Image (cartoon, rainbow, N blue to C red):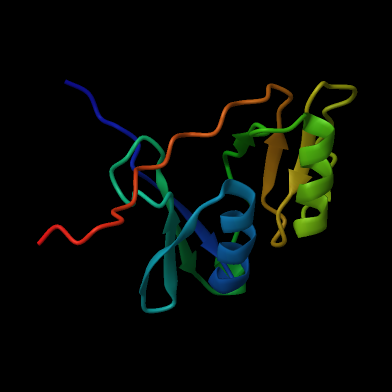
Length: 135
């Protein structure tokens, strides 16, 4: 037996703004609200192949830099095209001392660092939507 990663929790000052950013970056949607916290994830919802993300509102003093970071890969385009899209969404280049690399270190609107890697991945298949009434 083993565990499976199902949720990531990101403490942040503005869950609404980060939900919009990360939904656009990852192709996620808002799955629900619990008070000021927002859960985002794939259309299939919680428990699927990809983890959901809880954007948990905290006071500014509590929103410390991450001790980990996320790596993302472009889907359906090359790295340069995806980099331009992420920058248009509000990401900004970040220097963490990486030097010359084949990936780009970026920061989201609250300064949380993440890396855009170079390998283009295929899109995940979405579940078929029901077009007829089952009754």
